[in-house]
Image (tube, rainbow, N blue to C red; front, side, top):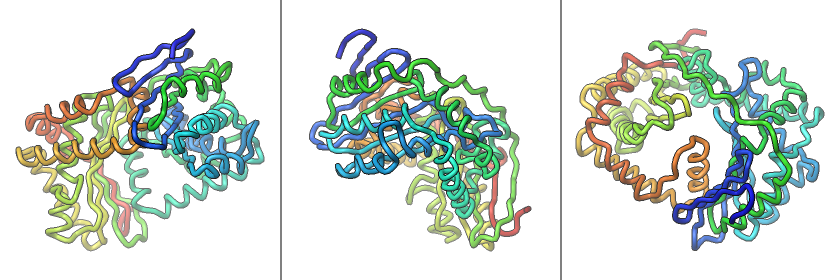
Length: 423
């Protein structure tokens, strides 16, 4: 589609349009399916809050579902479900996402509902008092789920005072202090065209999606801007923190700060992490679970944000096995940091990652996430062949350098939640 204020570009079945004021629309056509995944991303998350208002972005995500100028909360829930579709949302450290899955014939309805939610929520004081209780229950659920809580505790220890360490849900104290005016101001500042990314993947037509977005957002959401860039986090010294909880297991997270999402070394990190603890054939699974029987769940992970990231390991073990599990993980980390991966391990990891890429292409939801990620991190969209080429280009020296830097057990921030810790 062309026209005033519309800049379009395409790569294969991917197409992009810029509709002015920073609003971006991305689509990817998937012939042969009869469904579509549609979403709106807002460049506003927990890392853009003040510490005293932790949980604001997440509470705002909840509140938009309580009603708009055109729809009640029940009508919002019913409009897509009566068509067999679904509606969902989530908040992260750097953005908030609203998504729908529908039949291809209902894409316009999904876009109408999503834009209505994002731009015209009522944000009433009476609804806030009710939804605040719901969020407090959500916080309580995490507090009662130690394998979730330990990651919040680890983030606080790893990032210190940096906003990446804020709890996405907030705390009971900060959520209790959020006012209707706080929500209105956050919405007015951040839920604007300049902060929005609209994406659709499935049996969609780019021109039709752009036309629908142009119509729905005409003269709406002007002004505002994107949040100010975050300062880079300061490096954190290694530390071991033990938190007492009368749980049946000890829940342990090792982790270090890494580079951000835009660093090309992320392909090597994904391969290294996968080989170390990414599946049943990984070193950690085979040693900690299969050989020694010390844990049911043990895995490596990484999360990359714009300014920095985290790479680490989680394990849950009975208190009498926890110290041995930690010792074995440190031993495996030390060996990985010293020797890296074998040639066979690296090739196996490449095969696993490339296979996962291909399988993900069968899901419109996964393609939708990839579309949005390109815009969120200002990165070019890479086709499957180019992605695989970047994975294939990773060498043993590449992963060895990362192993030495990020998997040295003496550099880890470690949090252990369970019996025997410090209160």
